[in-house]
Amino acid sequence: MNEKLLSLRDEIKSKLNQTTDLIDLDKIRVAYLGKKGSITSLLKGMKELSAEERKSFGAEVNQLKTQAAQLIEEKIAELKEIEIEKEIASMPQFDITSPPNLERGSYHPITLVQRECENIFTSMGFTIEDYPEIVTDYECFEALNIPKHHPARDMQDTYYLDNGQLLKSHTSAAQNAILKKYGKKLIDNGTPIKAIFPGRCFRNEATDACHENTFFQMEGVMVDKDISISNLIYFMKTMLSEVFRKDIKVRLRPGFFPFVEPGFELDISCLICGGDGCPSCKHSGWLELCPCGMIHPNVLREGGIDPEKYTGFAFGLGLTRLAMMKYGIKDIRDLNSGNLKALSQFTDDE
Ligand code: DAH
Image (cartoon, rainbow, N blue to C red; front, side):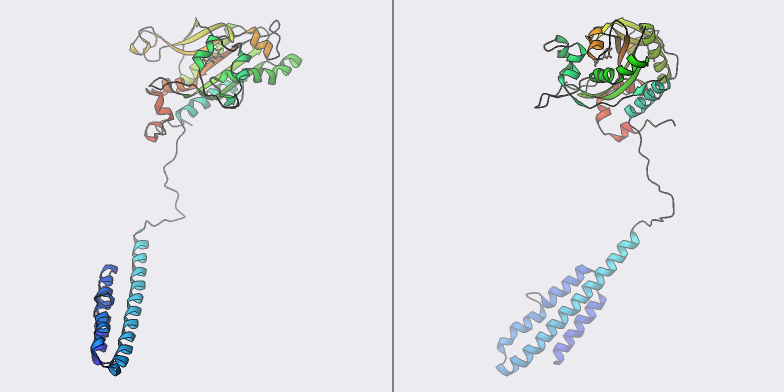
């Protein structure tokens, strides 16, 4: 290789030796091998040489070009490796033997009150039932003494599937199935029906701070011989006093629901003022909490139970409302928001 080419090769080598980053390296590549680079222009300048010279010089320049390209490739690989090592060194070091330092998740406020209610009711001998979210018109309405075109349906507009099924608008939709499931034991062995069934409910509602299209209820039924309103009051009062961890006063007001007779609205003494009257209870001293009543004879009959022999109560506790009251949540929409800042502050006491 001629002197000039040899010194050019040394020059490239020494420049490459001094380079420590890929950007500079690319500049070197352009300076020698780019369109206007020195090696490229040597090749272009060969036009002026004689045919003889062109042959030998051309071969040498091409050799230099190949060597330079190879040197640059090697340097690229070397620098990339150094970059990867630097990145690895800057990564946080995990000690797999040390205990994890991950933030713990938390239970949703509705899960918390649901579990609390479940524990209280199971301790009083109730079973917990699961029920689908998609039900039939019969389960949701007809079996509950709400025939087609009954005005009570207006309050419970929900979402309908093409096949006529619907998203249940209340947990009462499970009543018929529960009566049928446990009715035989009641009739044959005298075992009372005592069941609660928490679940997600849906209504075609415009949402605001107090209304949601998706919310949770917990239904409860008890059927036996001689069940009366006193039993209903006792169970509700016990459950609510446990949930709020203080003695809760309750009162019943008349309320209409086609599947109970008589039907009631159950109020609890205001948790904020203790019943004296304050803005939260509109100065009445009472908060509306749970509709309930004595199961209508038609509903018992539809569930295969003779209303002449047995009576029962039912209630539909708004779990969402209970969670809001218990934890002071002002906007119902926070509960379905997935907003961890709002939802993760309520921990399980256990
Ligand atoms: N299912 C009713 C609703 O969502 C609430 C209800 C009222 C349930 C009275 C009951 C009851 O069990 O006895 O509006």
